[in-house]
Length: 330
Ligand code: CP
Ligand code: NVA
Image 1 (cartoon, rainbow, N blue to C red):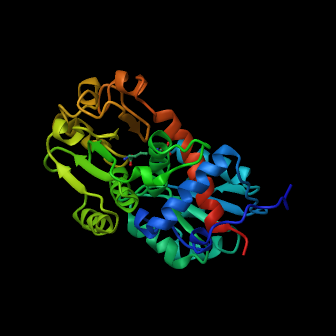
Image 2 (image 1 turned 45 degrees about the horizontal axis):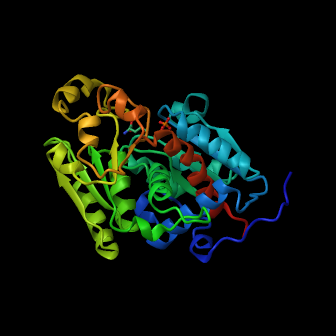
């Protein structure tokens, strides 16, 4: 049923209507903050948005549980729908050019969420499509994940008495990411820099984040007062931090490097000993899926500091806010 009155969006979000989200850096600090506020309001039932039957297409070249399901449920909650355009059942899998696929799908659906390998392929879709294109994970970035992650941090450190979020409370917190300088780390750096959260990446030599993303993060951090650092020692990376975060050592597409990476990351498990070095209120985050006993101990992921399942839930609320902004009726 459509036609329910939608809560009006703030100006910072109406300017996102029709836009793409390819990188965390595509959002301004104000837009990022407004999305987190809207996500919290949607989660608490303080507002309602009706997208009037709009359709999101999902083109996922890699596996996904959280992203696929949370986008599908988010669209349903917004009064819209989703079509799974898995490349194995469309002509994408037979090699139909992106230029043709993107133009054709733009005639049928209202937005595309794309999970693939190369950021360049995502950018090609965005170039040819006349509808919003959302990065649902590439080798370079995972911006939807970062929105959910900072929503979780804000819930833990910036909860107002009325249940709303006090996002200024994020300013000056430190998020320490220990592990591979990968897609998840990149979006955490960019989004954290926008929000004023200090981001420390702790990684072994040779597994640093992309230099271009680091430079861009530091540019954005100059506007918020945050500090973005790369360290090569796990205890130094987590010392006094308010959030400890890790992700798999071998991302999708790096399966053949798994054994070599496990050797290189020896000593980098996010475990109880590292948690003891952090702030006493520190929370433990992981984007999931996780390998217990490799990048994170079972005790850390199941312990009292862990917020990984709240974080996974927040994918739904953050993406609902994002879809509401990109697809809001004009
Ligand atoms: N964190 C995340 O993106 O999970 P999925 O790969 O299951 O979507
Ligand atoms: N870095 C991981 C994240 C999975 C959600 C990957 O790309 O496989």
